[in-house]
Structures are given as C-alpha cells and as structure tokens.
Length: 305
Ligand SMILES: [Ca+2]
Ligand SMILES: [Ca+2]
Image 1 (cartoon, rainbow, N blue to C red):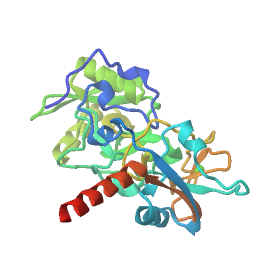
Image 2: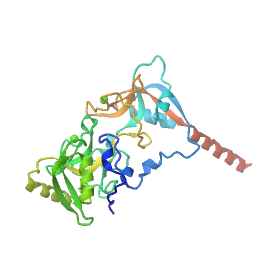
Image 3: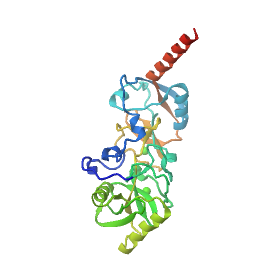
Image 4: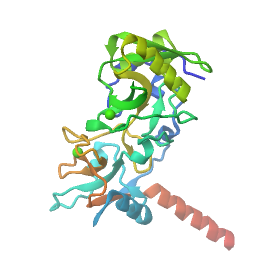
C-alpha cells in the first residue's frame, strides 16, 4: 500500500540534507522512534554527570548504561546549559549523538538513521540494495539521498540536481525517466508524487534492471538519477531522532570519512569525530525512571508484609 499524494504537507518547504523529515511531515504513519519523543506529563527530568575517563564512544555508552541511564541526550539549549562541564576543562567530551554505520552502511535496518523508501516511509521488507563499490560513503556528511548510477545505488547530496526515475503501480511497477528539469531530490519527489506514484522504489534485481533499462535510451545510463531512497542521518544513543542540533559551523563534515560520533567542544557546540577516539563524556540519569523503580520496590515490600 503506497501513500497517496497530499497537498497539505508540501515537501518543498524543508531544507534538504541532514535532519530533513520525509515521513510523518508528508502524511506517513508516525514511525515508532518518534512516538518516543512525545512527553506525557509529568515529563521525566534528568540529572547529568561528567565522567572524567578517557573512553571510546562505545565504551562511554556502555559505561553510562551500566552506571546511569545512557550517554547524554540533548533536546534544547536548556539541556546544554545544565551540562556539568568542569570550568577548567576545555577539551572534547562525548555526547550521545551518533550515526552508526551498522544501521545504514549497505544495510536497511529498523534504526532511525537507516535507509527508507519515500513511497512507504519504511524499509523494504525485501531489504534489497545494490551499492556501487565505494558507496554509500556519506561524503562531507551531506549525502543522505539515494541515486542510481551504472545499475547500482549511491548516496548523494540531496541538493544536487539530477534527472530522476518515478514509478506507478504496486505489484507490477512501471518506471519512468524524467529528464527535465534536473531536480533536487525533494523537487523530484514532489514531481513524481504529482504525476506518478512516487520516486522509484526498487525491491529486487528485476526492478533494478528495469530502472537501468529505462535510463539507457535517454543517454543517462552512466549518469546519476534520483530514486526514492533516503535516510535521516544521526540518531541518539537511545535510537531516537531529535530536531535540535548545535553543530559548530562547518560540522558535521565527516572529514576523514570515518566521523560517525559526536563530541561537545568547550563552546558547547558539536563536531563529528572518529568514534574510536578517547574522550571524557556526559551521562544522564532519567530521574522519573528511578522513581518508578522505587515505587515498585515499595509495592513489593508492602505485599510481602
Ligand atoms: Ca556517495
Ligand atoms: Ca568533523
């Protein structure tokens, strides 16, 4: 069952690139990871702890989960103002934001930062993917839209302008190349939804071949064309997405092509770095969760008496 085009949620109002939100904004069912962001009163309060140990991001995550609740999650400037950075500490410190390649590198998983098809807003049950040899590489931390080139997938900057492939049908898809105008991924999506079903959704080798075939007569076989693959890079350690960010200008940039974890600088601004670097870190403890445990213990002791 594919979505039907909607006029109440125009897709072109969003800034493409990192943190754009294709799913619920345009009429899909709300993903489970966003349901977790809904705050039911009373909201959980958190306490923050600075841990002065030099650990990798994953080691820090394990430490926080064992001794607190998790690596810190930041949703607002107010959260930042509560971080207990030591006054004499000017170095880098891990926060809970990361872009785990295990979630998206040649994989289509249920994680919030993994690949989706625009037609459904979800991963494909078949999880079919066929990547070019050096892709996906999340170059410059700017490539979160999927293109098709030489019969295989690649990730590209969503603001690049390419021809694109739309489709109609569900059980038997038909694919159509749109040559003009070359469009950003979001504009291509809008065009496909207005005139066809959606951007091309490729779920098996046969469909991949048929997409390749529709490009060949138009001379675009060796060029990149947009397809309906996209993802929302970066998620928090608890696997949620948050709209608030506080990147330092120029970040994230995936400068060394292996920068998938986030540190806080002394200015409280964020940068993406190699997850295997070792830094101190912030943990948070969910106080409401602690109170729930206390409540359960009280009930248990009462029952025993
Ligand atoms: Ca790429
Ligand atoms: Ca960086």
